[in-house]
Length: 255
Image 1 (cartoon, rainbow, N blue to C red):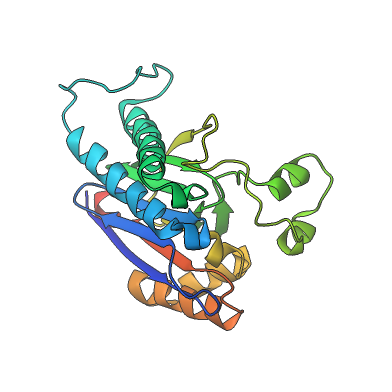
Image 2: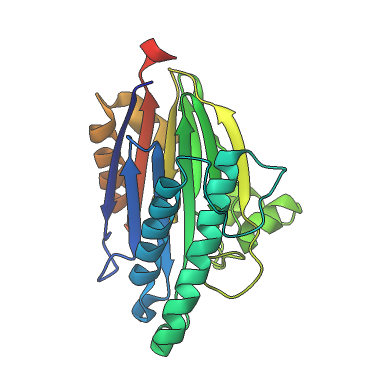
């Protein structure tokens, strides 16, 4: 099964440093976007801890014959457990770094990760970094934001349009490293050869409407030019935050 991908991270037009981190490893079938929180409290440290920890644990668990560091969740697949546990370990690693460096006490990170096994995708996320499926007919968000505005939309208090411009749109309710109980959402689905998976930080989804994301990708000649165009348009729309995007597709002949 051929997997091809392209990923770009950009500081944007307002921030002085980039707190986003990404991991793109087609050989491992693993793709991760982490959006660090905390500003001068080293959000970039938190996001880097996440991508390194997730990558390391997923790499270590290629074979099932190993000691499991936490209780195995029988409701999830093996790959679902790999991602969920890697998030829990990332949460612990951030907390340990904060204990050693108290000046970083407010740092944390959101994360979205996709793990491929053939055309089967296991997806996990915490926070408001998103995953989309883009196909010939349109775009569909497949993650649910862990944010205050998303809760208000779900409760019928805000419309999606109102949520995009609400002053509390950046308030998240789940993050790695924040010391609370984590609700790691895990799902699985098959990706067709005509579909692509987009993982992104809110620096992209907050700057470009879903339909325009789809139009930009469909108009691009390949994945690399697509992610570069997405970053460029997000910057043209203000680039208020760091911007990160990974596009992943399958070789249609192998699907």
